[in-house]
Image (cartoon, rainbow, N blue to C red):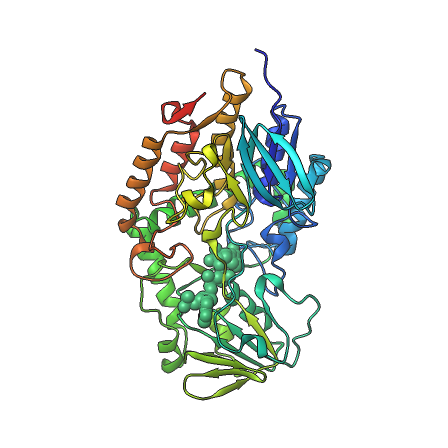
Length: 483
Ligand code: NAP
């Protein structure tokens, strides 16, 4: 059957965009371009360069299904190794010429059945479909604390690390206690003279040993690729069926195990006063679970201090807390997280009938199955609203969503369909089901986190991972308007 060779734009050369470009080219789509805002690929693994950076999802799970890697150095490999993996995959598949760097998409407008794109380099012409692979965790949140700009020493957000900064022998303050701050704390505590960790809210921490993978094991993986796949499947079942089911209330026994492990690790803190200060007052996994093999050990070192008093202001010499004390600091690290709800923005997106995405998402980011949005024909997302984002492999989620989107793109290729978008009724029903199910999940059990938007909507997938996979297997075409 004759097929249209669609002109497709992918936005973002992070892990999802790279995978999408490879898979589209494998399917014979030759006119596909990635527009990347930065001068290098890698998304989060390019932006984050802080000490201790690693992925807390085991590397044999955090990889593309089509690119197993026998050589991972650790159970959870360091960030630079993941970046090198992505670069290797791009080279191996010869897709580098199809990535346009320093090209941030500033505007996308649907006109006469096509998307007109503009980047920071100027107008890019018309595209038959757009695949958004911009990622979720990349708009830094800077804390709204008086005097922040007066600090005399270096001060930066963790995703804008001051490359080459020497922390040896210096007094370092870290504001925030999420996954990022936890990794940095363990990595720098032995090097700095004093570490003050400003902890507004303590977090639950699951102990996860992260030993190097011995050379003999890597050699076995190299000799027998089946073993790599076995390890992948084992982790996939552990994390997807285990973790993902536990958070949505579908695996109470697994939840109880995770809860016991977190509480056991907390109990290892010897000083009862410090232990009390580190104890959260909300349920395990309500905020995104942190994994660590060294955090409580690090904060018990004599040069470390966990500060629970509220921050009153930043002064040139340090951080003044509500009790009047000035914590003198040489370097201030802002581990204050990301605005996940600005997804796709600040790009201007104008859909059918001149309606902007800002208007459609004024109260909440809502789409259909995390992939499509009503009023935005031929617009597909990886990691859109209510995608499963949690303690498992984003790469797996991305591949599932890509396969779903690709089946819709295939309808466009067939030549019988020019425009495809979800029906408003289907989208309403999906979002009503999300809202009805969300109270069963742990995220809605009473805490603040980056999953929750300003109106209290939780941005994640409230069902099991198995349901997600099943829903992604094949689009229900009746739920789509096709012209
Ligand atoms: P985060 O989990 O959102 O943590 C932000 C921290 O900053 C919280 O402790 C928050 O306190 C604190 N904070 C924010 N504003 C503050 C203020 N004005 N005053 C005092 N404290 C303030 O951010 P993150 O640690 O960067 O992690 C974000 C996500 O990135 C993770 O959950 C994870 O999904 C991903 N990540 C993954 C890995 C990995 O290994 N895979 C590593 C790092 C990050 P409150 O809790 O009180 O709001």
